[in-house]
Amino acid sequence: PLPSPPLIKGRGQEQDIYFSSQGELNKIDVGGIPVRWCSFEDISENSITGCFFSNELVDAFPIHQFIIEEGKLKEIYVTFEGIGEWGVVGAKHSGDTISFSPGYSSANASPLQEWGEDNTIKFVEVTDIPSTSGLNDYFDLVGINLFDGAYPDGYRSEVNLATLDWLNTVATKLKRGFILTIDYGYSAQRYYLPARNQGTLQCYYRHQHHNNPYLYIGEQDITAHVNFTTLERQGELCGLETVGFTQQGLFLMALGLGDRIFALSTNSSNRIAKGEDIINIMRRRDVLHQLINPTGLGGFGILVQSKGLSEMEKRQQLKGLTVPPMV
Image: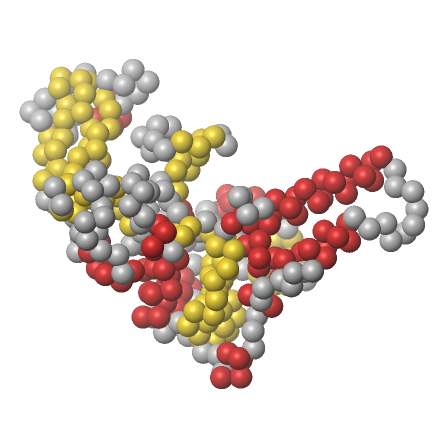
């Protein structure tokens, strides 16, 4: 989606962005390269020759949570219950409807508005049949059988169906070029390991992470890891080819980041480094090391997909996907 006008204006103060007298965006000039904000609706089909690049985008898409109960796939829904100004408040999900207890009148107020620090009204999880057949289709797509006996009752995880629509849209806009997706995640086989029985959903509030999405409503980030097998399989259905998959650390090392780090340690001027110089060098090296740390950012997955390449272009190996030499 197109960023909000305040966000665009904020970025415009940092970069060379110009607005008309009506406050509309006219031009962005970043290092001499013209750039413009646009939504998918602004891009015609098969009109882009270039690269779609995303970094930690897919993990922010909304997800469906599910659980195995009595050997069946159930979706996890959210409702609320408690005691408010109008008496007992409750709700129960059944199929596609939500019924409220007699103590609540929708004409008075939303129970969610009553929910506060005293916890008189709280969110409650309930399970029922899946809201869409897309959940079962998803597991067929990625080759996971939840009913092979390996997944016990109580096993829960999540499904990111929004990924399918997003990739389909991107593929229709791309005429010739690449889709580069960087994010934290796993293959389907690792994502849905029976031992990972609580899924991957995480919440971040003021740089602290936990796994309760019902706290700090509207004030925290909620994410789930990316299933890269989904992107590969859906990409094939959309006419994309998988060029390669690797980790960010290996990708950057293959592009020469190791040489960059080494250069920071070399005194090319042969002058005696002062204390402040040494501190700055150490800081810069630390930042670069964080990008390749296999237990942190270096463990991020990088998936490269292509469309419309010639046979000669397909045979040209991308430098970032080559294994760095061991010396």
